[in-house]
Image 1 (cartoon, rainbow, N blue to C red):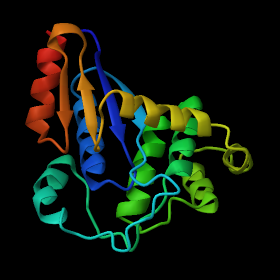
Image 2 (cartoon, rainbow, N blue to C red):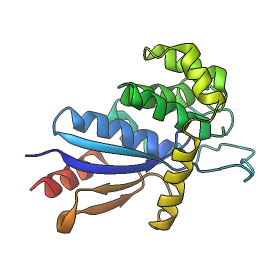
Image 3 (cartoon, rainbow, N blue to C red):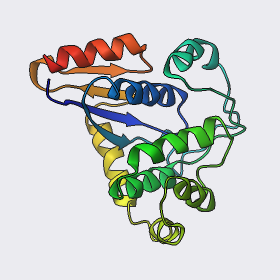
Amino acid sequence: MAAVAVVVFSDFTCPFSYVTEAALRKLGGEVELAVDYRAFELFPAPAPLPLDAGMEWADPLRPLAEEAGIQLLRPGYQARTRKAHEAARHAEEHGAGAEMRAVLFDGYFREGLDIGRIDVLVELGERVGLDRTEMKVVLDIDRFSDAVLGDHEAALRSGVQETPTLGVGSGAAARVLVGAQPYAALRAAVTVAGE
């Protein structure tokens, strides 16, 4: 079976995106996937950030998180994610995109880090082998800002309204999945798309 194309619109402060991306990484160990991650900021500036990150999502997501092998903790705040998406783009350019995405999610949901801060992103980048100085410069000069904004605008034009939104496959077998999906549902969608 050829690699199945999967387009993922997600945000690093979205617990549903965290669970879904972890499940996709697990699925990628079994089936060949060509995953294209796209930025979708939940609260782009100047939209106000919610005062409380809340935990109403936690109980329904726990079984999916356990299935994907991740731990969900309550973040102490909501972070802006534009720079985190830019950092992920930079990492992808250096062959560390998947690793960077994982440490961004873990940094926010397991360590409680403010992934909107450049100094934090530089530290996370170093964990996946990226050069500190280069990462800081790339984020300071907004090198990937236009790409991140372009992803968000493309999502809105396509009708994406929430994260995660996945396009699985192409042509007649393509499916759109919205929200966190059980591993079995993701695997079924990929299997159908690959046939």
